[in-house]
Image (cartoon, each protein chain N blue to C red):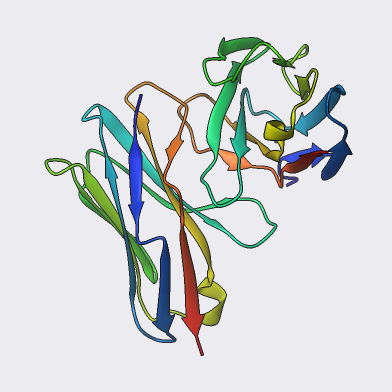
Length: 113
Length: 112
């Protein structure tokens, strides 16, 4: 079946702009995660959704970052007033339920100029 | 939170030889340890995982061992092939937690 998909694959923006990154999880997966991967590092947890609600947003670096999952499927990560330090690959993962194996999407490479 | 350290950062092996990557974790409450393989520009893919109720797990040429007392776990790849060249990440999660804490990765290069 189809895996986790993310759009866009690449996003280049200017400092101070607003961006939205989209994640389509595997069909039927109730749990969805966002991670951020900087160059040469492992992914770092940002936020976890169980269904429609954000069960844990402790990894969001500051209030410029926000994520939603209004219908319990697709999720959007929103970044306001982007900064150069936000440049990274943003990975989405989903699992059948929380605590199950996490399957990753291909990521969105965000570049803030 | 959980802190995972991974060594070595780079590993070069001759085709056919074995490769071993080691990770340590800080929180004794961690009970789930997956390993992901990430090829350049691609998504991380789960290759094997282990839970704290077992000490070793094998899947063909890949094995993972876990030492709960010492709080470390290792990935073993035998009979390495060129297609094993990639970055490998270990991760850990706490009991009843869902977020994964990742190591910094090991770049494995298999020389033909």
